Image (cartoon, rainbow, N blue to C red; front, side, top):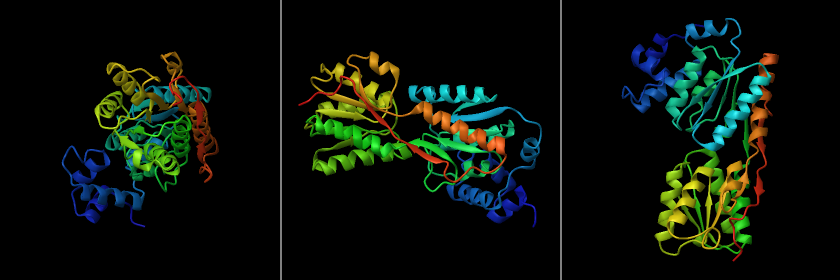
Length: 337
């Protein structure tokens, strides 16, 4: 079989070697390469399994003891907690983590994954963003890659995540059982898998209760500002909700500030529930009711899957795609009405 090169990829896609190189380095947007061309290059790379020769040579050299850890926002307490557990578990297995903040940007994630290969990492644990798995799946042919918290639909990569649909459903059911009928949901990144599943859980719970015409969904990112602005709009809009379901702890913080700035209190004037658990929620006034994710167990399982692969120097078992159950953690932020 003829060896795949930058030139053969360029010939197949009808572009220059420079264009191929820029796409592979995650710089398509920077150099204004069309989406159609970038997708054609990545499709050909995936089809042929191409990896630059200097990368392959470095991977055959001696053990580095380094694992890449790609997270979408280390400023987010949830991902900071995740990083802490992953780093701790890797240390127990004599590995050092190289932490990369991808800033919720798919192109940055793809470029960082390739850069980590050049730094001779032995494997990667990644929280993906975007919906195109081609780069991480390609990298996964060279070193083991394990997804954590999120995953791509129909991916062959192993992953460990929470059942986000159940978390969204259970949190909404709690509010409904407490007597709430007009419930607002503030979502995060709309294209992220956890967000879609949480919103779907919220919608199903509302529909089953016959409240589909009274539900509100707003928001566009897992940020404090999104929680703050969305809550302000809810508070000053028509038919103010009696409860808010914030789909992350950062969104919850923004919502809490907006409620208090408006002269209202939780839970007397507005009930509030959050997705994600963190110790600081018990120290807020009132303590926040939330849907907890088993972050420590997710981190431990992701590291175990990765280390098992490295120890056995083989493929990861197909059943290494795991969903863990969330839990409802009672606080004092939900009123019975």
